[in-house]
Length: 191
Image 1 (tube, rainbow, N blue to C red):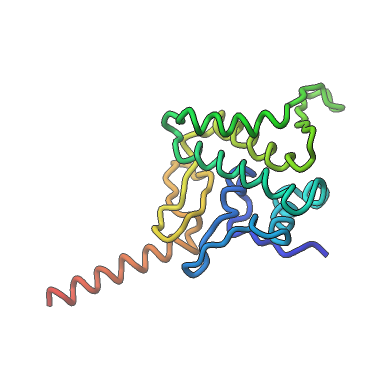
Image 2 (image 1 turned 45 degrees about the horizontal axis):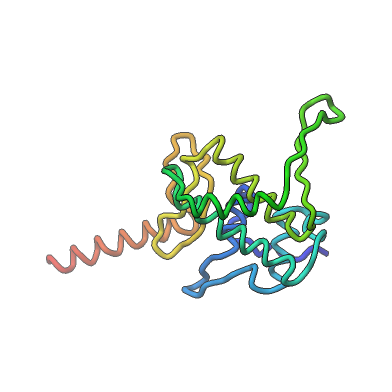
């Protein structure tokens, strides 16, 4: 039986899914990469059962993910503007752990395979390459939730590119409720 999905915002691209391994629940910070169980569960759900189970366990599997997460966050915070050299260098160090081998697939279409020397680095390298793909296609659509108590990241896939919340059900509704509460309080104060 697969482990329960610990991700707060499933369905995001891998790079942003990795960023979302740090989140807040009722004011308390949660880090899915801090312990072997949640880290393995994240790998299982984000990469699939085979990929999630492959590679090293424990610190050997977590350390590359933590390094990649920090590098991806440094770049995500900067885009779509210029990326600071130290953020670019950090991401390049993760990318240097693997390489993309291009080939012609069995269906006659171009294929790309990520190869890594150390299997523990595979998830981290995959997430870093995923960030490059997002930056190539939608650098202006990488967003962090605008709710002041949320730290989640998402790819804005809305038609007009104006999504503000990780989910409307979670943070969008909270923001609406908070605005309503403030309006009611102002009206009471002036009455």
